[in-house]
Image (cartoon, rainbow, N blue to C red; front, side, top):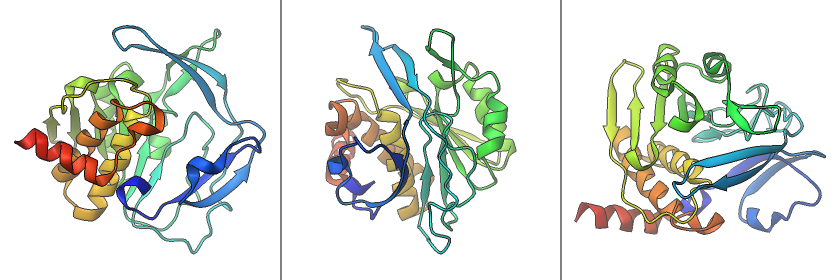
Length: 247
């Protein structure tokens, strides 16, 4: 979100070997842990990912890490795996989004990442009325069923579908689909996080789900076109891509 012009506070765990240069410009609330969640990703020619869990990471408790008086316009909770056990200690805000990708992961005996066997239980742990839930078709075997379950909890589900766009499942039971913005993919890693962050940023600005979706789809398209952090787009780049696609 910092690339979009937001003032960002990052509450997370870190190891002493971590290079903080990538976090310059952020307000940091850090807790040192000996082990962080780590993965190894590989992709086939069709873009299908095989992911291995190298380390599950130590538990990260937000309560006590985030000052109780802290407030924010919006909060994004994005666990990498199962390190966040509770959302107690979240800053005071009316706009809370949760990326369910990490919590929806389980691990096979050979360390391959597989879908969690209880996705509804995962949702109930993190979702409350009024929240946003982000996840992709790859994260669970029955993504639309999970999305509908999220809406029964009073929340809004945003289901990303890769090159097929994204579908919003509203808490009133309605569904709205947007087609993807064409992209020339280089590296898909992190595209979902860029999408979700851009969506939340624009929603906090406009309180308009359709505007947030279009903005996020442009951010996602740009994210897959760059390697690593090079895919994190600025606001100007996102708006330029939106203008180009509308022409």
